[in-house]
Image 1 (cartoon, rainbow, N blue to C red):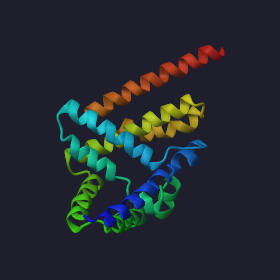
Image 2: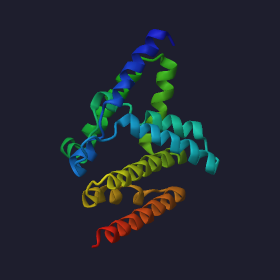
Image 3: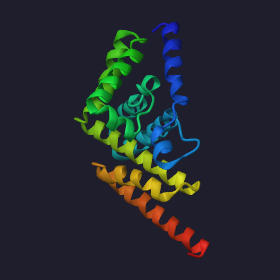
Length: 197
């Protein structure tokens, strides 16, 4: 890969640091939400740890999760409302077009390799892809809990809890979701006790 190619690719993916996760704003009213890059970073760290814990290919998980939202550098982050309005096919088409355009700045061998990982994540046809998707969901739960701690309305954040980790397919992530849910319940009880409710 030439340095010019690397520079161009870095400029494109750097946009993810400025792409805000739209659902936090539209659903929960978060003023300054995390970026797509913030989300992808914690997903990759979780993938590293979880992969090592259960002896699955951590590097593949990390790569998948670093790539899973790269298309949003061009498309932006679609919240639930936009996805409904556009429809699944249109969203998938736009995402596919965007990832191909972004990866086109790379040499063919890397472009193919990264596109295959992105497609594997999207297809959910392998154990690694299923676990990667579950990590994507559980990271959302960590963030939802942090926003609750920051004082955002738990009722508005409830939708994320319903759609998130509770639908995890892997036992480890389901257990982690239960642990996070229990932690959330304890913190909510403590907050009610402190406020005298």
